Amino acid sequence: MLNKRTVEIEFLDEIVVETNGVREAYRILDTFTNKERLKKLVIIGKLTEITKDARLLIVEENKQRQEKIIAEAILVNSFAQKLSANFYILFLKNIYPIQFFTDRLKAELWLMEY
Image (tube, rainbow, N blue to C red; front, side, top):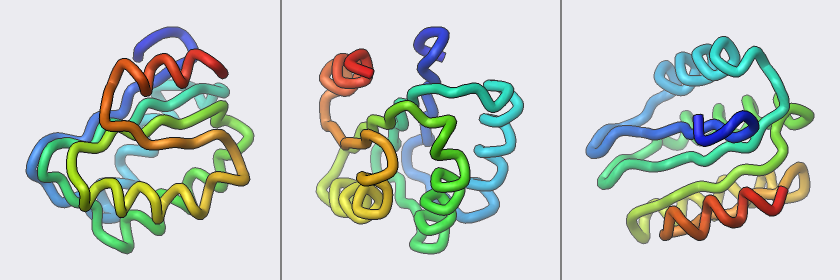
């Protein structure tokens, strides 16, 4: 946790994230945060991929939690991750503030605005 209202979610390097991993991550997040309203810094590991089904599940999970998400910053490491992040943001940009970054400090500063 970065601070009392911001949680950091980090995906390891060189893995493929599938739906079962997404479900487990949200179960842990809900337990850890007690489902409180928060900001999220999501860090996608180097050479990490998120399957299409997992991306769609993440969108649905976040839509269900939209009242609990203040803002979300996504830290990406590659062009492919930027494309995936853009796809993801399209579904959520009108629900809560969300943006991707390649620089962690910029992502953290952006989250502080909320």
